[in-house]
Length: 191
Image 1: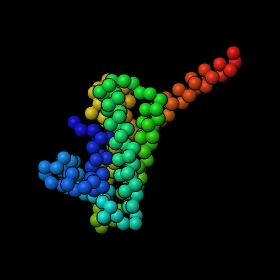
Image 2: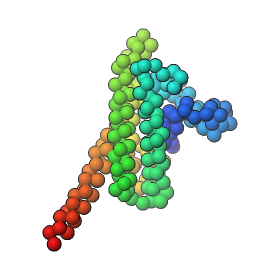
Image 3: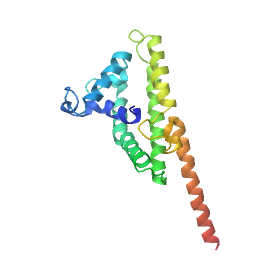
């Protein structure tokens, strides 16, 4: 099963890549183009339909979010899959910091996208369509993150994690590391 944390940055970033990489049936990223088209056909989500060419004043934030996904989310998730799933190593302080930033970015950008739904044209999107997108797509993405690409048992936070709580969990881990370092420094100064 695919991991949304890995596929979504690629799907959202397709329009920033040369069409030769994704448009034709034999191209290397055509699978992601197909997934995007299926999603659009089912839910008519205007956020996923956004491209740099169709950007208007109110939705210009989407391009920035795609850059966040490509520059932050995709590398962090690829590294996480590599470190936890392939190398089977635990997290380091730096990795936890990257996951904390990722957790914040994922929760924050999803919350903004959810907020945007309330301002969509009511003549184009019915209340039922908006509720379906909010309840079936955006809210689950905000609340439950499943990383299917990573083998079970690698780390408890990888199997299933709440995006906003990933931020809190990683912040607590980092704070614990800082407290240990501060205590060691204070003990060293006390000698």
